[in-house]
Length: 169
Image (tube, rainbow, N blue to C red):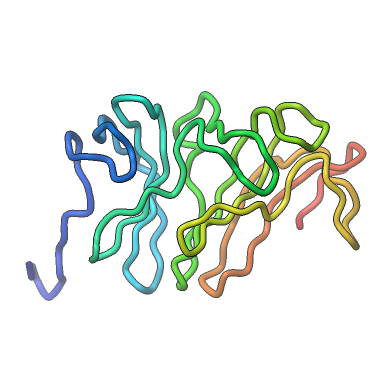
């Protein structure tokens, strides 16, 4: 629908079914991310089995990106968004890839409960970086502190701590 030269569309609202869950949106949080393709990334609380989740809206519909308790296949463990619902938001590239920072519970990285930056691309979650893992040229990441920040071309950065020193990666 056009209004003053702009196209207005409803992306999601409370009470509507939350795609990929057996619940509905009970709260949609104010933090959003938008790309040049018009896709909208938003976090929401979901009634039913999943407490919180991250969703991407596009004209074709809403995709579930990740929900509380979802398994992360390449590192093990499950997604935990923590206690602050506003921390659920991630970044969105122009290609539609989503990057998010989560706690991983039960991850097989020796850290027990730890942080990770994940990517959702083509319907699957994968790990970009995780606490307790070592990366060439970077070393071992002790704790992922903040981010990810995502440029529209898909470049990703985040803030971590290693050996007591804060770094931007």
